[in-house]
Amino acid sequence: MTETSHPPVRDDREPAGSDLPAIELSGVVKEYHAHGEKVPAVRGIDLAIGQGEFFSLLGPSGCGKTTTMRMIAGFEDPTRGEVLLNGKSVTDVPANRRDVNMVFQSYALFPHMSVFENVAFGLRRKGVAKDEIRTRVAGMLEIVDLSGREKRRPGELSGGQQQRVALARALVNRPRALLLDEPLGALDLKLRQHMQVELKRIQREVGITFVYVTHDQGEALTMSDRIAVMNDGRIEQLGTPREIYERPAGKFVAGFIGTSNLLAGEVGEVRGADAILAYGDGGRIVVPLDDRTAAPGDRLELTVRPEKIEIGTQPPNGDGGSRVRAKVAEVVYLGTSTNYIVTTSAGDDVTVFMQNATNADDIAGRGDDVWLSWEPRHSYAIGTS
Ligand code: ATP
Image 1: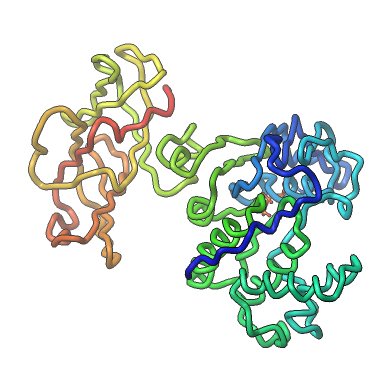
Image 2 (image 1 turned 180 degrees about the horizontal axis):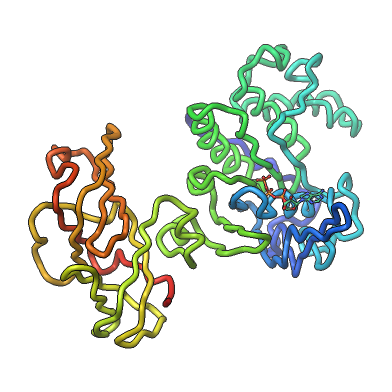
């Protein structure tokens, strides 16, 4: 898909380009009451989303993502705390007067109307002049790559195309921010992946702040500028996809994002900025301490990502990194890569991804004794236990 050179859709109604965050939540708490019981859905959230940012709320089912988004939209009132849009508190502003639009998983298109009329609907209600409606709808259909399909009814479009009509309909109103609640959930995997790339392109082109709710970590990593990982009504970590993947703030994030190997060992010595852990049968793990402190005898927990580990039947060369003995439990061939699931000499299950650039399938088979090795910088300390 090539990029076209549309001007940003954000218009000039209000002084744009301010440094104020597009959306701010300050001390936001939401408690529902169901059957006489208090249900804490959001337990205190502070965050600031920048203008034009693609921001995702990511977390498992029931962690409070949708509730958070509904409070931004104005469909729910916070029990405590404040929501600000462009620096102004909107606590008393109803949903229909907030400068945000929401796109749902069910596209909620009007089935009897054409694509053009679906997108034009909001503009007509606002009394926008006919010529302007025509220009704005055409421009938006071009951005979502649906030019030429103006006359079709939603039922004559694929799921992905319907989703793009829903997107065009929300964006044509030029909201300051677009809130998307699992908008790709109904699409099959291939189409979903295609739409992820499309959504990111569209967001870049229109320059509008997107807040995206998903429980799919791959989706969040692909599209977001920043991600808030939520668990049980709280933000566990807020950062760029790389920060969250490579430097998870704790066990929950490490386990939720991608595949992560969680290991622990006793600190034998601290050498410079690294802790050297004794591990299993003659093994050793080197862990940069960053800003943590650890002393000999402490038990340190760490993660190492599967793609950072080398696997081989011979002891690894060099003596600066981590080296751990293991036995292969399972080999899974996945086309572009092979996954090895091994049990270390300390009894931990570890996953190793090897790219199949070379004849990686020859490395080891089930039941083989192997060595795992990785560079010091690929161990990431997440806590002491
Ligand atoms: P999912 O991914 O399954 O949509 P979520 O992360 O969006 O989950 P929320 O829908 O925000 O989670 O729900 C958070 C918590 O609040 C859950 O425990 C849920 O059962 C509860 N909850 C949500 N809406 C209500 C309601 N209207 N009344 C009572 N409890 C509710």
